[in-house]
Length: 208
Image (cartoon, rainbow, N blue to C red; front, side, top):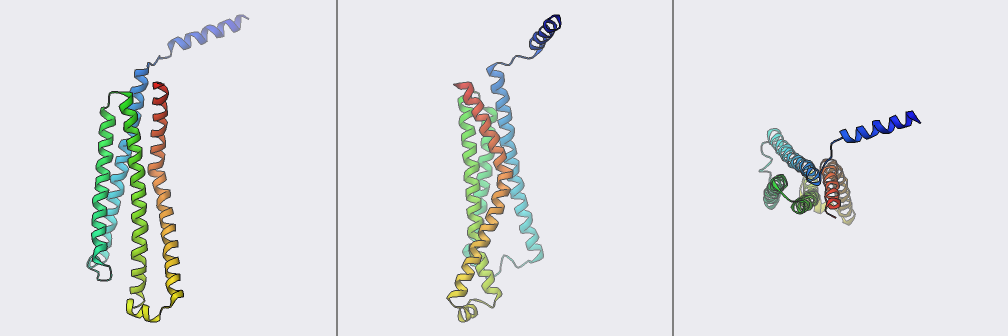
């Protein structure tokens, strides 16, 4: 019994020595974690943009006349330019979300900013995957037809079966590449937004 009493006393001493956190302290810790997560989302988006620019520069270095290739329709180049502007817009949104979470002073605002950030990431992923799928569905058939001698030759030799086969291969290729990119986006953004969701739940429990 004496040993048990001694253990109880030691346990009480340990509890007394442990730091006691207030709701305000927990709120600040959650805010700091959320701010760090959103900052990483911003960094990842910058890395993704930089990687894309590096690929384009490398492609132009290997094939200087790539941008002036007459096989690709002019509107596809304009589509790529417009898509780049949209990506810059999303990066700007990620940065603004980070600034808002870093400077917020209330649990309510922090919760709302976390929701906004998660929605922005979701919209960005949906947009990026849609652009990838659309680009493949347009560029692959054009490249394949030009590789076989041009549209006139392909149309003269092709029948309904060849057109269907080309459509099926294009769709399958788009699905595979989109699935691969989805996996990458899940690792890069999905895990970060899951942690944001966990922070949101902690704040919701504190508020209730």
